[in-house]
Length: 272
Image (cartoon, rainbow, N blue to C red; front, side, top):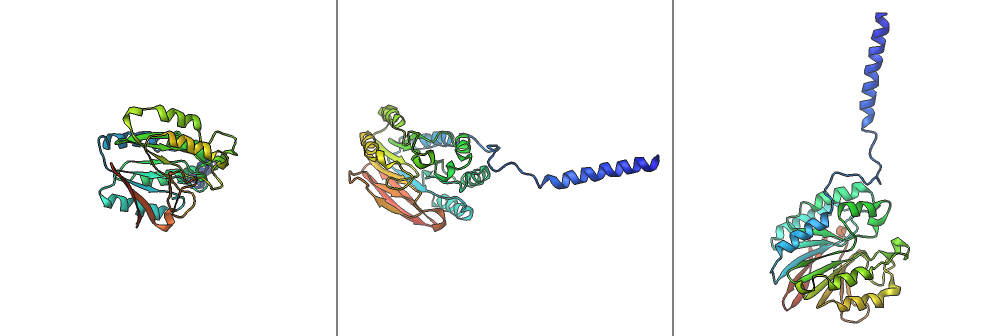
């Protein structure tokens, strides 16, 4: 009888040890939208930008993109921006993930959160894979949003039409029309930020003329920023005075620093 009790005790202990040993073998599904990180990051960061830049007539904005998989390079980029000491805020042009996996979003967010300046993240096409859209919406917020720094309105847009099979209204003209009228007395110049630029395969080029018509209605359009191409570029797709600055991917270790003054702006490529 005693022997059987000892056997049962030993069996219980062995099962417990086995369970604890196997615990590390199981993980949350990579596409489960489940994380403990901050939510609605763009909203909170945009509030900081607006507060910090209130009444400023000169803005210095770091714009970078396509950091997916490039964790070491992103860490160095964050250090470079922090060491500059004179940047007001940063704009990530999209693709924080390669596959839309939740862990990618979490790891990238943890690095971005080391920035000493506020930042916002635009939706990229890779961020739309799997359950990436849901993760992006939970972590960063709506895929179309805006904020005002000084008297410059930054309008951030989802232009990844291919990821929606060109069936959803992307770019969203209703959103642009609403933004054109919202807070009109608070800004007199405009910057547009997006991931996929016109003329690439992601952008719905069938509506490019209409898209630019909407952009031209905004006061004092300065420039547009984009990523996606994994190279630096600067072009005006319709020769209508609206210029796009495309930022490189993080593995090439550079970003664009925009200095916006009352007289215009300058764009400088920064290598780190």
